[in-house]
Amino acid sequence: MSSVEIIQVSKQFGAVFAADHIDLMIDDGEFFALLGPSGCGKTTILRLIAGFIEPDTGRISIGLSDMSGIPPEKRSIGVVFQNYALFPHLTARENVAFGLSVRRVDRNEITSRVNDALDMVELEGLEDRYPKQMSGGQQQRVALARALVTQPKVLLLDEPLAALDKKLRTQMQVELRQLQQRLKITTIFVTHDQEEALTLADRIAVMDNGKICQIGHPEQVYERPDTLFVSNFLGQSNIFSGKLIALENQVGKMVTDHEISLSTSWTRNKRVGEIVRLVVRPEKVKIAHQPPTGSNQIAVKIIHRVYLGTSTTYLMLPPHGETIIAFVQNEQSMPAFEVGQNVFTYWEAENCFLLED
Image 1 (cartoon, one colour):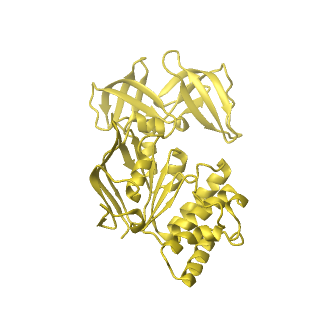
Image 2: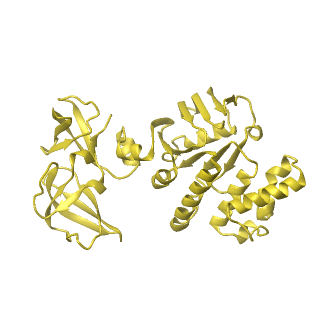
Image 3: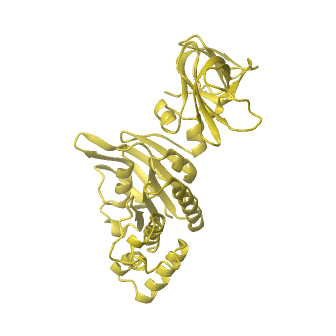
């Protein structure tokens, strides 16, 4: 068992709660992401699990064993830091072997386990290079091998891909996920990159101001965020405020503050008369030259467009209200929409939702 349980854990620095009564259960073999902006407390939780700092209140268990007072070297964890923390005067092989040497593991076993770890992260032929002779991706692999060679129960990753360029980062995301699935090691990953969390994690905890705002599978957290903060942090959103005026056949109908009628099939048990906020993601928004059939259509004027290769971003302004954003896939069959054109934007009721807060 290598599950991790955090029970009512708090950590305060001065007047600031970096972790504010956190309850969290991470399953055996799960890839779990802590996602949030800088200063939200996600790295503090990682350091608490690692034993680098002690909680003010609450307790942490790894594999059903209470970690209170247990030093980091006895917690059976592996850690990969954002800057990799490689020893510049040691080769890749020596860096990976360092933790085993400190533990006084037999020399023959060290050689065998280091070779296995280097093979695991595909560093064959680079064993005798120093960090300065290696690319960022290769250094990241060395740091990962060094964390895995001690055969930890839990792997802790503190934004280890942040220093890589986008193409290499995408490649390393795939490799890291495949490696974790092959080893079936419980992994806790800290990141502020929404796309990274959605790509890698089995579940995501979105954090803000030392608190967990929402926990769920990537699709659940992205498609059905509970709060405005989660909705905005996990991607762009079109948000409409107004009043819920009717509930018919599980479809909620609202009128916005600017007298636009909208419908949604995800009402979160809101009641008629309540002030609500409706959210629709830009990729769900469609554009047409003529008035479309169905719900949620708004006459707008295109005020800006950005070509992004696979898609085009359109900013549109209704006669009254806020700017509406749409992400449209670039296909030959799609009509062209130009700045200054008057068009119609629309989306289906099942593709938008009311916020919980």
